[in-house]
Image (cartoon, rainbow over all chains, first blue to last red):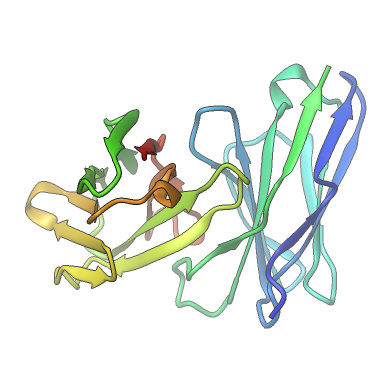
Amino acid sequence: DAGVTQSPTHLIKTRGQQVTLRCSPKSGHDTVSWYQQALGQGPQFIFQYYEEEERQRGNFPDRFSGHQFPNYSSELNVNALLLGDSALYLCASSLGGTGGFVGEQYFGPGTRLTVT
Amino acid sequence: AQKVTQAQTEISVVEKEDVTLDCVYETRDTTYYLFWYKQPPSGELVFLIRRNSFDEQNEISGRYSWNFQKSTSSFNFTITASQVVDSAVYFCALSDTDSSYKLIFGSGTRLLVRP
């Protein structure tokens, strides 16, 4: 049973550049959430995609955008990178029909983004 | 507003000791969910438990146990007879009707189990 996969594992970008991170959910899951985890802190929710639509968004600027494909995989795009965007980006998958509450979210290994 | 506080930044114990990780949460809702995740050095968050606000029964799973007390807004996690493999960062998280589909995490507790 394939778990959540993310690519790439590590990424180094320069300030002002754009980056795309990818996530494939756990088999059978239809919902993908993205989190940003700065060093030494807990993950912060960026947004969630369900049925190819952004269902909920955290307190992140419009530079952060996403997409979900028909096969439920997802991309996270960050434009105009800032030094403060350096973090571990985690993708989590779950089943969407949970009555309005988050179900058991299964996390991928993350993408470590470094902005120089 | 919702908030999760893990006051213990780092705990160090010797193998086979019992250890309790504290979690205090804030929410105005009567319906909410609480979670614990483990993050080993590899970085992947591993799901440990999900508990709803209407179920205050303590839960035990092997060496792990959880104590949920609504009166003190706490959801503490105990590892019995700790092992070196338990070394990781542990996160407590909350989801309520305001946050609905997202998890609100605490800042985590780093547990070091020494041989």
